Image (cartoon, rainbow, N blue to C red):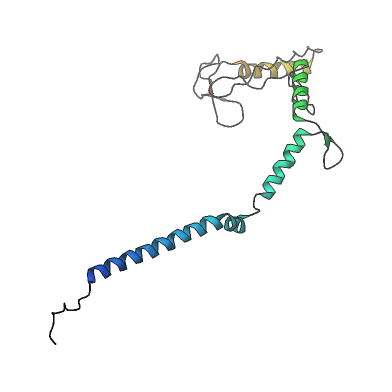
Length: 188
């Protein structure tokens, strides 16, 4: 065998490795892109299959409520009717201009204030004074009545300091505080 010398057969391993890696990356990228496309395309269908129809009840209730305040008609019981909310607001304004103390038709007019609007512990408003009882006749009954009245007068009209008790009752007198003619006030 004579002739020119041939190069020995040698594989280009670097080229094979580069082409193999590039092919694997290309296949991986293609698979990921197809999965993303598929998920994007079917996400709405899957979402509807998983969660579809859950808001139908809420939307139905809201539609019923809007219909109740925007249309005139009978209530479900059939005994009463309902009117538009705008008309109802106009009627409330009209009634408030006539008599602002009687805005709730089912209740009597609100004419009595309840408490003073001040900071701290609520203070009740002063109650109107009770009319004095006229003296009737004389005798043992009137003497007993006047004695009981004089005994109760210092306790009720005394200026002894009062301490809050924390209960829903009246404040109690502070022991040892003045307020009676004897000076002690607590019976010692």
